[in-house]
Image (cartoon, rainbow, N blue to C red):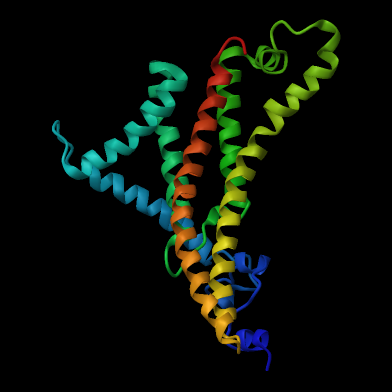
Amino acid sequence: MTDSAQVLAAGSHFPPGIDSFNFRDWFTGLSDTALANVFTTLTFSVWLSVAILIVFFLWAYRKPQIVPTKRQWLAESAYGFIRNSVSIDLLGKQAGVRFAPYLTTMFLFILVMNFWAVVPGVQISPNSHIAFPATMGIIAWLVYNWVGIKKHGFVRYLKITCIPPGSPVFILPLLIPLEFLQNILLRPVTLALRLFANMFAGHLILLVFTLGGFVLLNSENLFIQSVSVLSWALTIAMTFFELIVIVLQAYVFTLLTGMYIQGSLVDEH
């Protein structure tokens, strides 16, 4: 039996492919119904992420005090970080306070969803499936366009968004479609793809090093077997690197959403 056959016989699959991102439904009896793939590890992670955030804030503000308790301070610190460093800095005090709850909720939800990538037993973020980042990108798109249209009106909002001030008239036939494509159509796509690609790549890299270690360990060559230790050491190192990516991607998604809202509120770009 070859090394690869030994690994497959043990239940491992290497190299990891797209199937590594798919999970069967927990209740196989539902596989032929409309509820197929509703109850999977990924959907469980999403619902549990929502529950964690709700329970956390209800627990933190159960008995709010002027001098905050430790749990209240923790919740206020998370809110204050996004409010001050993103919302108010980009939108000003009045609009910043108004949009801070939305941006904070987005940041914490993406952050918790991303953390599933390093949780033993799950070890995959729902954001490594394009459907979840795409949904959040669409929500952000609806928010900043609705804000812009509400303030300026539909026609003036399109004019502000698609016609840079001071542009020569002769270049407008070329410039307007490009600005419309960039500012109206592609923003939710780039938001979703940036988050998806980072979480997808992170999960794939961890799979390669983890499963690669088992493949090396099943080799008949003693030297190759010893290299498996290096593969698992790199798994640990990449897990710490993934923690940085987890926080950074949640912050970048929130920051860009705040910038798009700011662009929708200003009178000229």
